[in-house]
Length: 103
Image 1 (cartoon, helix red, strand yellow):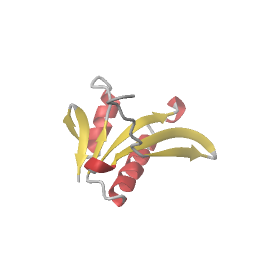
Image 2 (cartoon, one colour; image 1 turned 90 degrees about the horizontal axis):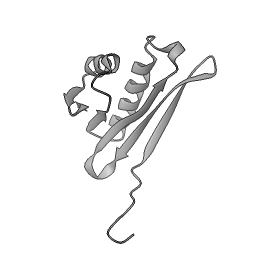
Image 3 (cartoon, one colour; image 1 turned 45 degrees about the horizontal axis):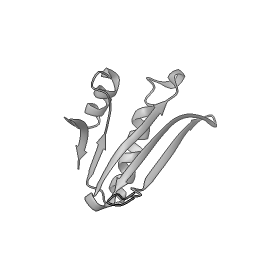
């Protein structure tokens, strides 16, 4: 692999359970060298959507990032995903190619 390197970014994955049933997941990729984190792989079971569970997962991932001293959290979503775009904006993310929360 000359000239190439593989870097472990660090990852935290949360599983949200309701009545012991896993209904959602979300991961935080941590880039220590830049003090940034990105929320990826967010999924909520369709039966449980629209009930605030995605917000809970995202808020917990943001809290973890801040507790680790990371000053920028990003979340990526499709621009035509109206629900996710609205949620990101309501959580204080700004649109900049990706949704970015700077705190």
